[in-house]
Amino acid sequence: METIDQVLAAARAEIERLTPREALDATGQGAVLVDMRPVEQRRRDGLVPGARVVDRNVLEWRLDPASEHRIPDLARRDHQVILICDEGYQSSLAAATLCRFGLDAADVIGGVQLWREEGLPLGQLGKAPPERDRSQLAAHEVALRSRVLQSPDSGAGGTGL
Image 1 (cartoon, rainbow, N blue to C red):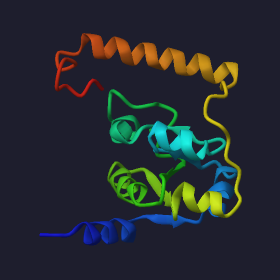
Image 2: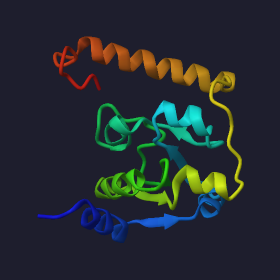
Image 3: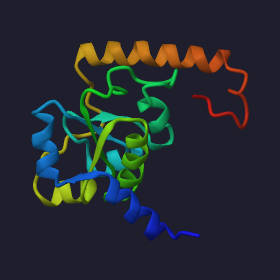
């Protein structure tokens, strides 16, 4: 049997880990930063500018290129996906899983806490996204709700993916 420390060490041995500055720089080269923190942490600490938000509980379904529940512009093998969480633990485990899907996945060392300590920018939760992003999000949410309503396992205890 393995401990969580062993599982974490194995995951980190499989992935590329970036400092917050390296992650920010990589986005300028086409990498996509994905913030997987829950809303409470985003509200508390702020938003990572330019990061796409995908909640941890659905991350694998949204980023698996073979999943019917994927987000098409994220679930691609032709760009790097960099995950960021609060302190860099959940993101390491999740990035290792995404690598199993064939994605070029990495994570941010120290997460948002180190990002903030290094003085990198953070935005405020609640500011409306640009109009284009709002319409894309709205269309995506309508499609997801439609799938959930039609899904036989969307009731109590279902995943509601």
